[in-house]
Image (cartoon, rainbow, N blue to C red; front, top):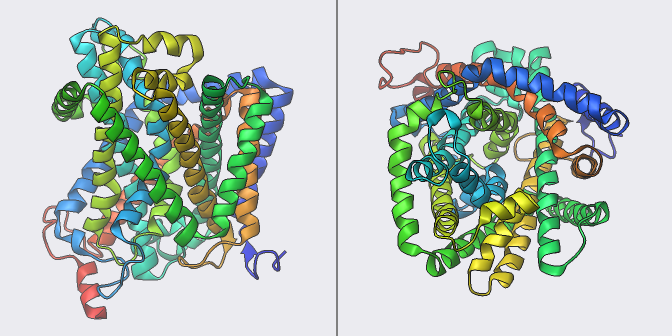
Amino acid sequence: MNNLLNGKKLNSWVFWPPFLIFVIASVLSITAFDPFTSTVEAIFYWVVGNFGWFFAFTAFAAVVLCALIFVTPVGKIRFGGENAKPSFKTWNWFAMSLTAGIGTGIVFWGVAEPITHLVSPPGGLGFDPSSAEAVNFSMRTVFLHWTFTPYSLYILFAIPIALAVYNYNQKFRVSSGLYFLIGDRCNGPVGKAVDALTIFALAGGVAAVLGAGLLQMGSGMNFLFGVPISPVLWAVLAFIIIASYTLSSYTGIDKGINFLASQNVRIFVGTMVFIFIFGPTVYMLDIGFQGLGQFLSHFVDQSFYLGAAEGDNWPKWWTIYYWANWLAFAPIVGLFLVRLTKGRTIREFIAVNLIAPALFGMIWFAIYGGAAIHAQLNGIMDISASMEAHGLEHAIFSFFQMFPIGTFISAVFLFMIALSFITLADSMTSTLAMVSTEGLDNEEEAPMILKVFWGVFIGIISVVMIVYAGVDGFKMLANLAGFPIAFVLIIMGASVAKGLWWPNANWFNLFKKSDVQADNQEQE
């Protein structure tokens, strides 16, 4: 086995528990679908229903702490010390961050979510569907869901891990982020449990996202080429994607992920420019800036809106569900971002990995969402009816028919969807393989056999989801991990606070020169 792993050892306590859980879940989803799905849903809804306040607090606290780190002098600390040099150009760094974070999500939801909130706003708020209030609510909600908060969750995991790995010579693992609180015990049972939990959450999360992507790509193939939607089509698409990201993973992060992410973001930008030029340009500008104002003025109250006074469950099925989803992804996405950040300051890291992707998400939804809302309100196209008739995954292909060469752009977008999922799966399977291996440092590539294993395994699970079980059961199973990870995030927040102002944290004078800065200067 060691020969297959290039002389490295399998991290058994981290690898086997999540693997066995998903094997058992797969068997149950096929042999006992209704009991399996209903049980998972019941547990998930119980967690969301009773701990929505906890998810809301955790997500908001992450934004506040990231902002605090950004504006204080500790933001000048450089990962790896003052003499460390960056491994990637800023553009490539940003592209990999965007595509590993929410790139696949904005592809799927860019049109579907703004229209959903427009025609079905929360009943408890008293908005009429398609009203001016519903338009404002739709824009500020997608800005909330897809910009600063999700990336703050990623960043709050990444900073303590990167600080421990690059400045304190800790192992390249999620659990290393706990170093500043528990010291070397982060390499013991507690650390192994954290790493296993994050693998479980991410493997299920990526499989669920890939399953949704297969549905969207199948819908696109049917729309463009008349190919019947069937399990055979999904299986063929899954095989192509698995083969593609496995091949990309073989070339390593410097070539495969780097190249794919850069091309992916260029296509993102190209489609946005096309829609901006040929769509309702002035309306998109107006609704984008108005949405920004709405987002800023309602950020606090909407972050904490739980529908308690109105008896409305909308926040639980949207905002809180999203926070659980982002939390499930956050540790491993954060760990992947750590691989890109050596030689950068914390302030640079937050700017490129939080602020820039958040602004990109705003522009994306202002253009895609603004054009879709304009079409819906002015009777140009009933996108809502198309979604109701053919599913959410069909919305984007209907949307493009409003534009010149719409069919061609739909084909380009179909390719972009595939590329987005290949890039996501590549980056995440590479990181899963690294965490599953003992003895790797942050600059080594994981054994190829583990990359292939995780890539194929996740692909198989995604096909099982949509053919036999449906995405929801597995997605909720994976998102359940977001609940304990929310506690881990709070511990990570305490760890990074102690790490940045180590060892005598002065909570009331954060502008005091930090001991970590002093340590870095002594190392020079």
